[in-house]
Length: 70
Length: 454
Image 1 (cartoon, rainbow over the protein chains, first blue to last red):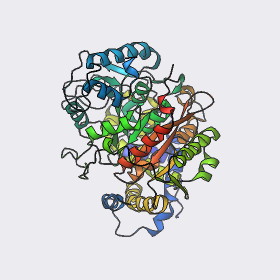
Image 2: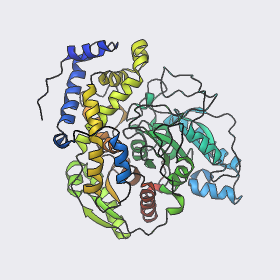
Image 3: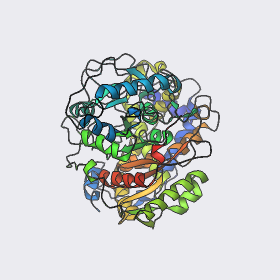
Image 4: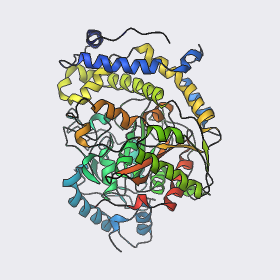
């Protein structure tokens, strides 16, 4: 797993501002802490390393079809 | 007949068909209980002044009410939000159309978390919904009114939506049965969206059999929902009485280690009941709940924040502080992370079906790993421990939405404070019939679902 740069409050604020969103006052640092933990938990996924290059989001629909019978 | 409001949906529908009770008598019985309970639990946000129904369907004359996010043309759908307060829908949702066709009577709209984006049932715009077993405790969310109204026997069943646990959490907290359907099984047309890749619609009712009756009415392809599945729909209610020789996968060691001891004891006892009824149990490694839950949250945050982007730009002050904060978080999800998580989804579903379920019919796990918390602990003033507690409440629900599979929640006990405990049966895509039959068999062997809050 590649180490990710830590989110800071000002980066969260800038990301939101770039999308036209103003954060509530005093919220940025707390959001940064929460998002850091969430993105680290997601990035720790062991299956990432074996994810096929060709895998695409819509492949999930085919997986549902394949998995529906035991 | 003793109080008809205490019948199950199946019993009430049969009583109407056999003319042992009239729809008017059912309505009157429910309205009497609503008058008694509404001031205590705030389950309803609106009551239908003159309910009508189509005579002759399988649910003919049975009073239901639904989460206030299922649109009906010409009627208000507030979605638990200040922004949508008084908004009048231009179309009727597919789920309501189908219930109308089945003869059900909609007698009102039910409280919910703001925009279905909260797991507890707090709502600063319409008032918190409270747990009928103890008003100090959460009803669970986001279909809070659906869980509370069914538990208090104000209606025979209710629709909810489930994006990260919003059918199952209130069903568990309130001690009723709740079915999270396979993604695509029930049309979302005319229902308020939260996160399209995760959103599902399902019933909350007094028994698994009652859930089957509602599912039979609402399931099936709908061309107006682009993600609606074309899979054929079995008659779930007709399949309830299959022999209870289910193969059940579970992870007892995980449950004993991670769940509250009272929850663990009740769910493992439920497994024992299933075995005594003819099921075979197989111990398996627990799925990676925390990774799957994080993936679910990445998808939910990104999609919900995109859905709300315009209002978040134009009127952020009209959201509650808590929901605004949840939406703000979504603007910091990198698009590449969001898409990578969606690319991983197929592999995780296949792993769950081949390794966790393997040859089993379903995976048994608690609906909620902790005991149901109080409104105060989980509300805006909940303090520093509140985020951790909310994460515990949703730990065993979100992973199911990421996988897109169905899950049935059934009550399986009460904790030492008198709050319900629930088991969750998680199956393969479109295995609702198996889950409902297993829940039905469990409820024939137990009476947890028959307990009624005083």
